[in-house]
Length: 416
Image (cartoon, rainbow, N blue to C red; front, side):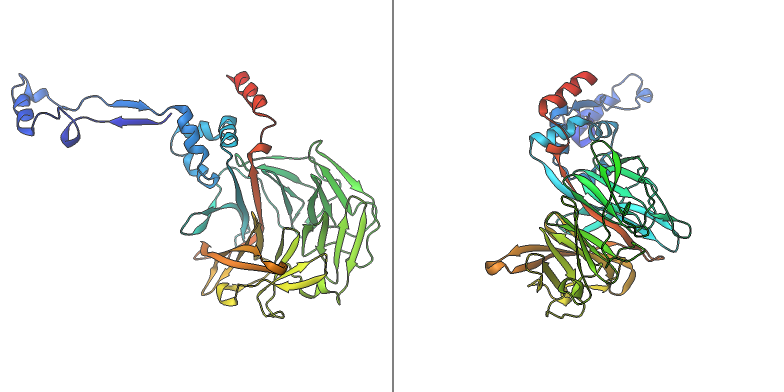
């Protein structure tokens, strides 16, 4: 409940038809003027209808919700309710939210952040709610409004079987059943609503691939003949999902696994894919985007077309529009609701992270053009260098949060 208080007295209160001199004379005529402590009337409260408050808050981006919970108890209760998401559903509200796991290697700490975006600039806001321990070498994927984080290592590269899920509606989390095999720096991707985790351990045919059924919450190993080109260690640089396949960047080759038929493909050092693919990359609409520091195609960003097995430049973006001083495995390129986000170290301030947002457009002839919409300093630390270990987009589609409107209303009535 939002309460609006109104105090009478002074220039904003009292009898509007009396001047200040008349009010003063009335006070002086009081029998015991020394007992007059306050002439203001009691506060008048006006309640903002709950339905109106739901509509207002429903249209507020999720990145503001953490701050709204500190305003009052009414906001906390509303933001934690299913009713708010039903209201967002009714009004057709959807949004993309960027989550980042930022580490400070000097302090051995890892913290989750949300990218707060406005018309003027963007910046990372730390999530202060109780988030799970996340280990180096973890793999992460998203399904709907959830982030799944698996594996990682502790100590001297001791792999883990841990698996957790984060509900981005409320920034809550819980443990999932452990994987059957410990893994770190594995490849991961979502195909047909299931999570496939590949490698992250010594190569062997019987358990190199593991799949998680998110509905049944069951892990199963997938027997598969490992490709000969794959590194024996199973430690991968990066992976993306395109055209129903999980593409993997390996040390000496590129791999692709198609889960529906269990088929593998591989491309060696001399292939077009291996020629320009680096860890600093992401997939947008089944095309692979990557930074090309050599400018081999005359532009800093290149696009790989898997159907044609060819790289082409992203037109319209120049090196002068990318004010980063470093592009390494700690930097990230992210698909943000169909746009391209680039995050990396900022020129002149080695401890800062800059974000460049690029809108993509396909023009005549299939050529893709980029338009730099914003450049923002999103993270700064005067003492320690920051590394982005995980960066991904959660697309909160509210029709996925509830089965039907009637079912949610039944649940709400049951609770009431």
